[in-house]
Image (tube, rainbow, N blue to C red; front, side, top):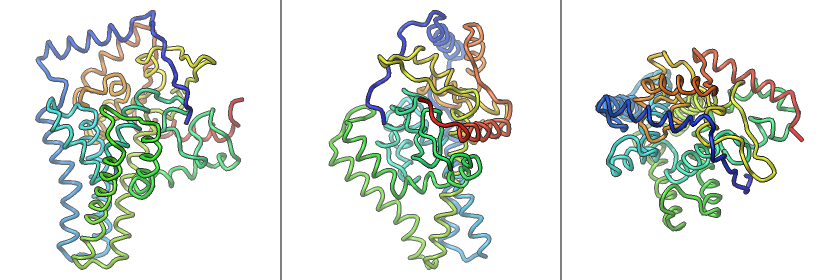
Length: 364
């Protein structure tokens, strides 16, 4: 990754964020609302954890036809992605509750989703939310050589086919978290002394990583085998679960930033960016299916990525309401507000964008 830290512009002639922030604060004050979660989020937490864990207990305690076994692992994968998007995500942004210990517990749910709190907070909260869509700084754009997400990335001949093969690789996201990504990220982040909040001793982070990985694999692999499920069946179910969750999460992530309209700004020779941080988010982020109740509910408001990127410390349960304020303010300030009316149109845009990136070699 690029070591030169980009510098955002300090002045915005339109005063976009100042006006928007005042309007959003007024909305919460006038409606006597807290910016964190409420009973709706608490109930959704119950729903998502039930979807995630109930099938697991059925699998280890009952004999069932093979097709039912596989189907339940798909359901676990759907629940796994649901917990990640609705519970873990808000928890690690500190927006689930006003109480920090509640946020830590909910954010810590990532440990049974194959991830690690420290790594996730650095990659997501620090790198992605700060340097959104900036090549060499936002690690969400880094897929190694296999997929080219920006024009600045090196082009290879096989990228001509990436709009075909990428969908098959997306399902490996959480599987990679469990096996390799967390170890590689921790080594890299600790070396750079990156952190979200207090920087803990490397020994504490490595110990936490190893212990939580042992517990994770014990829950999902060892316990089912001890309960009498044959090893190959357990491994197959594990792969099906992860592939389902990985596919869902990858697609949701890509629809927010890797589509035709969103930009990948590059700093000038002095490392300066054209826009302020808040305006930068408008150019690099897109919403999709804002009026689809099911998408709004299941994705944890991640289809309202514009609102989430500008107000990451506000719980996703409020995004549907404040979206109107953000959209109107952006329009008044003559700034973009990228939005796809449906999930289908966003998916088509993503793969059209991948196809285009696969045709053209990198920028000089």
